[in-house]
Amino acid sequence: MLASLVSADLRVRHVLPGKSTRSLGGDRYEANFQDADSLRSLHELLAGPHHAIVGCLINFLGLSDAVLSPTGSQAQAALETSLATFHLLKEFEADLDSSARQGGGLVLNLSGMGGSFGIDPGPTTGLAAAGTLGIIKTFRREYPKTTAKNVDVDPTLDFNLLSARIVQELTMDDGVIEVGLTRQGRQRLKLVHTEPTGVAPLSIGPESVVVVTGGAYGVTADVAIELARRTRCRMVLVGRSTLPDAEPAETASLDLAGLRQWSIKQAKAEGKKILPAEIEKSVQRTLRNRIILGSIDRFRTAGSNVEYHAVDARREDSFGKLLDDLYARFGRIDGVIHGAGVIDDKRIKDKSTESFTSVFSTKVDSAQILANHLRPDSLRFLVFFSSVSGRFGNAGQADYSAANEFLNKLADDLGKRWPARVASINWGPWDGGMVSDELRRLYAQVGYDLIPIDVGASYFCQEIALPPGTGAEVTVSGSVAKMADPTML
Image 1: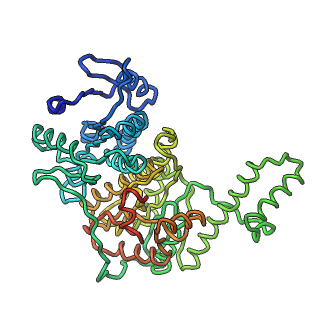
Image 2: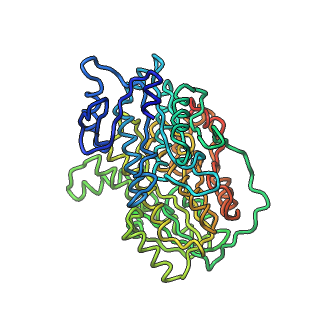
Image 3: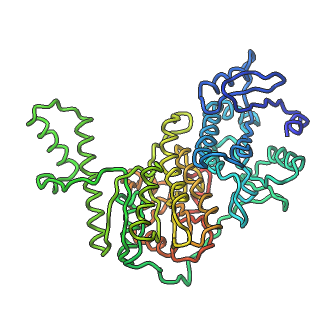
């Protein structure tokens, strides 16, 4: 590959992952991709006394042995590969953006999921590189002058042929952000509009057990409550917050402003110093507890037996044990809605490693635990709540996009192997949940249609009733065409 690049008259620097930054001689270097300081030192070495800038970045990490044949946890390999890609782009983003004005700004991200990004039939390899796809799509939105693309390859392709095709991709800017290279040639992904038709009745009833992560909040709760209304199934809600006690009568009827005034009054009465940050923390805790208790009441009103478990879904020793205990108690888990997730939006150049890790792991680690502990022979459905940010990328959400792309590809993989309906639904923005009035105004300005709660919940119930083997990656949005436009989202 390097020889092909050099023969194309390109100045090539080969950087290998290692423990620290050092020159290996002959335009070869080593750096710790998990360490921002190490990459900063690498950048200084590459720039040299003439302050050369990097105009092209080709990321082969997705074709490394650590990705194609991980020896440990797949989720950990996915985090390390995504973090390395994030760190590289964060360090060289200014160079790439600047060089784009002189014909540079090229980013090629390689993965080895068969040349179809894991969607076509057949075993899915290289799943640990899935997160890098979302990072690249987000980078393209944050730096629209660059040419950034994901190139997924069949890793069994002849290496000389593969090298020639990759070099060819460097010269092509046809606006395609996701390209597959297979024995049949150059492939591209295409969204196909479908409507679920002839869907059989849900095979879920009062005796069924459905696990819902993040199910006490937002649209995840709204969707699960609709499922409870239709089936009266037993709902097992999983959240990180401790189940709160009933709210005191004196605050139960207060709105946000009223709660703030009440908290200030209480602090004065107790002789405490009034600290705005502490007051706000107390108010938000009360509101969060109110939502949890309110959701549980709504499940019961819908006719479901419901239980709530305060566990960290990222931890195998707590979430995995809960799943095992449910099988021991009920002998079954019929369905899972994985809606847990956090966001901490910042552009790549401003985002910290800690923030990226938190957002990524909250979705990915818990999804991997589900894959490890669920018993597919008795499972009816597993649905990951993904996001259009995974499908299209979204400025400020490199970590969230990466996590959702991992969920998409994990669903592809499990859907091929499990006799259950497995889906990852890339939801567009809802008219509810975390969508504030400010966000509604923003979406209205760009012409995005929000998903009404009842419509989205109905789509969900249709999706889980589809037979096993149906396409796992699903996008549900009122404005798909606009979101697919890289200049819009």
